[in-house]
Image 1 (spheres, rainbow, N blue to C red):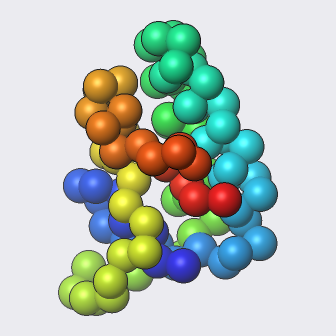
Image 2: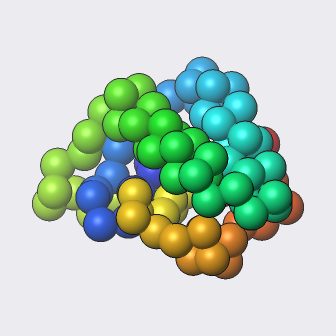
Length: 92
């Protein structure tokens, strides 16, 4: 799957990594629901760090369509809330 982190670029992620990413996404969703700004910041950073660590960066000139778009690291809780669907940021 091709994932874009807004403001950073794209990475290719194997499906095998989504169990770990979904656990972080669930935690992020719960923190957003409770309004835990500090927890939200920490978990968003952990989620994006995991994607960077597990994914393979695509070249900047690559024009692959992104199957998943994630917020920038400095996004606010309200900005991320607007990006959510029923599954959180990451489907599954």
